[in-house]
Image (cartoon, rainbow, N blue to C red; front, side, top):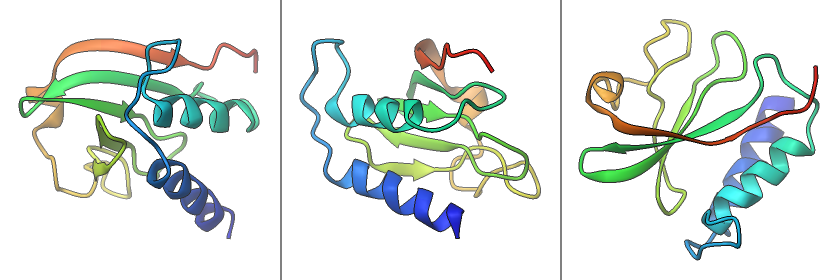
Length: 116
């Protein structure tokens, strides 16, 4: 049930997001996602958001928080594209199997710095 609630909240944040930049230089949907993560207990490993170029577009990768959970890849508007890794097989949902070999220009956008 907690997983469904979390998925609903993430979807809600992303649907209501805009692509306008905030004072931190992020799109509003990214800042809302960061705010959501900061309101949750500290994870291990710490949550993070990474920016890449993939298939000629800017994308954002959010690694999975725990075992057998999917990671998430979003486009610049906050639309879910695929799960590059995670799940029972560790290979994601199969919709972007070349993400890790084809991505470029890695940039850490945010990482939870709270102590755990």
